[in-house]
Image 1: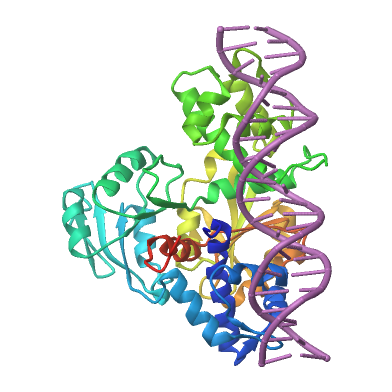
Image 2: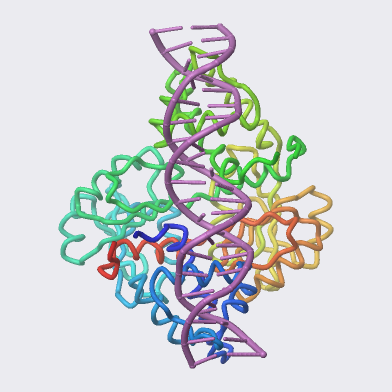
Length: 208
Length: 208
DNA sequence: AAATGTGAAGACCTTCACAGCA
DNA sequence: TGCTGTGAAGGTCTTCACATTT
């Protein structure tokens, strides 16, 4: 019995909300309350959690700290995850400088670029390496996740190289949905797609 | 009979793929071929399109240029969409400098920040305005979509101001899912959530 | 009394399979 | 023949509703 992907995608949101509650000194929370904060039904929260175990106390609710710890463990957020950034153009540089990843055990430990002019520059304590070093670095630094921020035209090639190098998951910032070997996990960050779908709802065309 | 949101979210991907085909000189495409390129079943593509009309030719397939035009019209991408960026910290500045929005009729025409030190600076041809000018500028420049890139602690307040100012859709880059009046469209860009869900599939915990 | 955990029901989305048309 | 458009079937996810537990 495998867990639906939508459920997995919600777990990080639960953790975030629970962290907020903990910061406000709240020790126990019911699915009712969590649901209100997250705009979800209480039943959905209980059902989601039930895929993994029985974490609540009947009549009481969930112990906030305990549930955080369990969810972090389920997602593997108790571990350290080393990241590589591929492509240090404007976007790649912004990603490397962005401080928001670190809190949850993610750390950018390597950066690569195919452009000789970029190779060797230092960003946020990291020295940009040539693509030729990919396999070696990924092995030596135990990197399983890559962030891809290369031009769209290069996505397919880069994804191929990453797969060969043993990368297991890709956070893809390019405006493409690359075909991948299907044991490789991919998540696309694509603000343009988001904008293009929002306009439908603002558009007079819509007749519903 | 209203169209499922998942369908709307796929339309921009269809357009992107069709554009690629057009660039390669392909004039006609079957749902079979499109499906292969997009890793979808042909049936899904046909069903999705059928919500909006009958765009294909039986025995032949779809005329690429015609289908692009229809889909762009459905999504309102034939129109010009003016955007405001709220928050010109590191992230906001990167967004304003990012050239990827323009191709599809989106244009950043205003930027705001609550920090007096940021107000007045010029970025990509835009002068940063104080939050007090929000309502006036949004009205004058006919802005319906805002991109929010403020610190997480300010999201709720900013979203409230935007709603009051008449904004209809928000592309939210903050790591929060704000509660909003439900006629306001929101899409969240949240790379941390994406990373945190990917680790589940890399994690030894998983037993399926 | 209050809230969980969960089978069952319901809603929603995807895929099938074929009639109909070029 | 080849492919669309679409009811019907199938599958997946969400919600209900209640037995169970503290």
